[in-house]
Image (cartoon, rainbow, N blue to C red):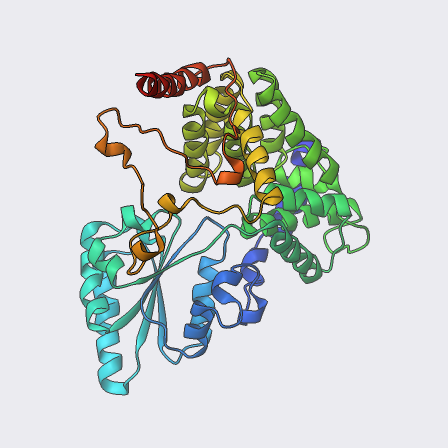
Length: 444
C-alpha cells in the first residue's frame, strides 16, 4: 500500500465514529479557557458577567479557532437560563420564531429566561435578523452571536446596537502550545519538541486547527508504532508534516531573527526579489503577519523616510489590511508593501535627526521653552509673559514668519540634514527658499 493511503487506512479508521478532539476538549470551567485573557482574566468584563449570570446580548467576533463556540457553551453551563442553539447556515425565520415562542412560554410558566446562541450569525439574512430583533429588544431572550466577519458590515444596526461586542484575538504561540500539550495528555500521547513546534507554528492562532492536526498526527504515529491502540513512541515531525500536508521549514528562534534581519536589509538594499524571498520564508514558517507588518511600518520611516513619504502610507495600509483581511489574503498586501519599500528611494535622515534631537534633550534636560511659545490660554498666563511676542504664521501672507522656536541654549541647532535622494531635495529647497526670503526681507 502506498504512503498516500496511510491516512486513509490508519487515521481515518481511528477517527471515525467519535467527536473531534477539539470538541472533546471543550473547557468546562472559565479557568480552563486558553487565551482571551483580555476578556476572561480575573476581573475582566466578560468573565464577571458570566460568573454573576448577568450576561445581556453579546456578539463574539473573532477568527476561526479562537473559542467562540466553546465560550458560548461554557456560558450555558454557568447560567440558570435555558440554552438554545441554532446555526445560521441551516436555521430559518420559522426556527427563530419557534425559539421566541418557547422562550415566551418558558418565561410565563416558569419565570425562566432563555439564551439563544446563533453560530455564524453573519450568514443570517436581514429578514432573519429582523425576526430575531423583537425578542432581543424586549429582553425575552439573551442573544449570543458568533461571527468571523466584521459585525459592523454583516449585522443589522438595530441588532448590533442592542448587543455588546466582544472581540476575540487569535491565540498567541504560548496559548497554542498549551492547547497542544493538553491535547497530547488527553490522547495519552507524547510528541517530540520539533513536532510540537511545527504544530504551534502552523496553527496561525487557530486552536481548533492545531488540535485537529494533532489528532491526525497522533493517529499516524500510533499506526507507525504498532496499531490503532498503541501508545508507545512519540509523535514525530514527520507525523505532523503528514497531518498538515506540508513540510517543516527550519525556523527556530535564531531563524526568526536572522530572516527578519535579512528581510529588512534586503528592503534597505533595494532588492525586491530578495525581500520577497524572505517574506515568503516567514509566511511559510507561520510567522505572525502582524510582526511582519510592524517591521514594514518601521522600515518605511527608518530606511525610506522623507525620500518617499508615501511609503509610510502603503506600509500602514498593509498593516491595517492584516488586521482587517487576515491571512492568507493579506500576503498580497504584505508583498505590495515589501516591493514598494524595496523600490523606493532611501534616506535615513529622519532616523539620524530624531537621534540627534534626543541626545540634545538628554544633554540639556532643563532647556526652557521660549516664553512666546508657552501656553497662553489659561487665566493668568499673560501676567507671566506667556505668548507675548508670538507671531502667528497664518497672519502673514507668506504663511511663514521669521522666529526662534528652539530653546535659547539650543538656538541654531540643525537636526534634519536632507539627503539628495527622492523627494528630500524638493522639501529642502522649499525650506531654503523660505529662509532666503526672510534674509532678503531683513536686508531690505
